[in-house]
Length: 463
Image (cartoon, rainbow, N blue to C red; front, top):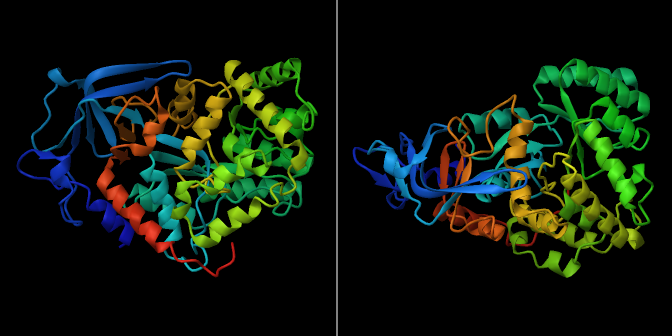
């Protein structure tokens, strides 16, 4: 049905009468029946907590369908011979990462690539070990897309989707805000997306209706509302740290320790989680190294028109958010703030806002990890925010984010310990996405195909 699916499914293993290994699996035809199960033997399993991590050596991880069905000492477990058996000696298994502020493109694609851009974005997430995406800007086709992925008709991360956003252009009255919540709830969206521009009355109408409907809302903090009122209203996540520095009037001066402590206490009092998106915001405010952005090797995986738009943005980066002359103090305040929130126990959930400025889906995760490390957050805490914390956020929907029996089978097979060097995520040996195994060979083959498709310059304008 889809070219992408046939390419990736070629790496999946057919059921056979004898034992199979991953190496022999790559030769199976695209229409091969799925295997009965997988067993990854003698692996080191990474168990993450906010402040630390534990590595359990000599484990076998068994997958049947879309679930992890067993995690046990390799010497103590017997696995049927007709499962796919993968030797994980000296390798590590870590839960798949979540993109908690991501985007899924419109169904009509981009310019000259209307038929493939959407599938390519989904693939780029999965190819880099991002196995869950909280989509933060809804388009009508996405609900069907979510079902297609769950049914195995497309390859991509598990999607949790916000509907079309609540903003100053889409909402004109409290009554309209109330009705939009009711409509999105009945349509099946997972949460509501807040954008700037709502009045206090519109925001409160949305929040009251959402709380009564047991529906989460998150995203930005409208300027007429402010951080304190948004938290009091029950906004589940504050994305991009929006409204935090404005709440203490520290957008153009260094924030004091006292002010940062106030923001931590305020956040804890209202049980909110933050999705920082530090790397993207450094780009938005003009605090990133422009030469480094231009040199990102993953830019070859997006259409030329997108690249041109991103490169052009470097000449005028503020988009009205901030005065570029304050970029350095803004960035320093944001880094100090995210560290204070983390140290103070405010839940942090990982996100990069891909695909946005120089945030190529999946690849952007390592840039965010580096930015959070520069803020002083330990690797274990960062990886926890991308795995366990995301699973905790969606605990009422599914079980994922850990390597344990009953969890959704989302994980990466790594060649070294990611706690020592998270850059090993880029060179993983394969990704399990809801029970579908994407081998390194299959991933590399399709990445090359995407690169070739986007190699020719496009005359199309940025959409």
